[in-house]
Image 1 (cartoon, helix red, strand yellow):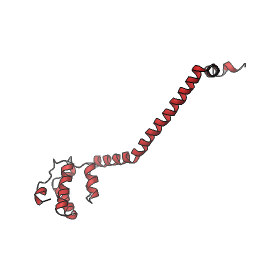
Image 2 (cartoon, helix red, strand yellow):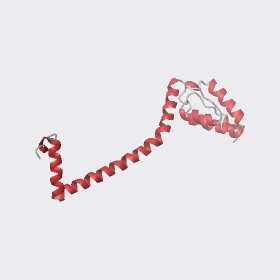
Image 3 (cartoon, helix red, strand yellow):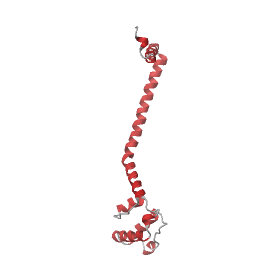
Image 4 (tube, helix red, strand yellow):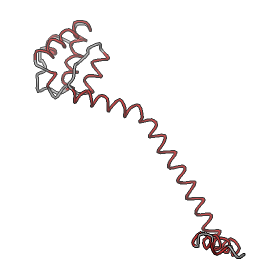
Amino acid sequence: MSFESIRILPTFESSDNAWLTWYNDVKNTLNRKQANRLFGMLWDNVNGYDSDANTNYLREEMEKHGVEIATNTLGDVSDWAIGVKDYFGGFFTAGKWIGFTLTGIVVVAVGGLLLQIAFKKDVRAEAVQIGTLIGTRGMSGIGK
């Protein structure tokens, strides 16, 4: 990288990717400590705190480089929600597959039961008797 690549400074309207690209160019041209200091000075100068570039992505990426970017309440809530989603994301993915597996087991079991009822007279008679007991709340089986 040369000094020419870092002369085009990001502005208030620049995207988070533009800020990251500029930061990486500065870091590659100078060093990390100087890049962090320049980023902080420029960020404060253009009021990046209130810009659209102040995203969770930019804050996380810059935190990896040792730059802490402040945010507003909405950004804090957004960061918290993303953290919760990441924390529980693996559980919900596993839960989804467990749910699919259990649903498959239930479908196969109910399908097997329905086939038994359809093709075996003794199973059908027993199912009708159980259904009658349930339908009459046990009253049809009292005299037997």
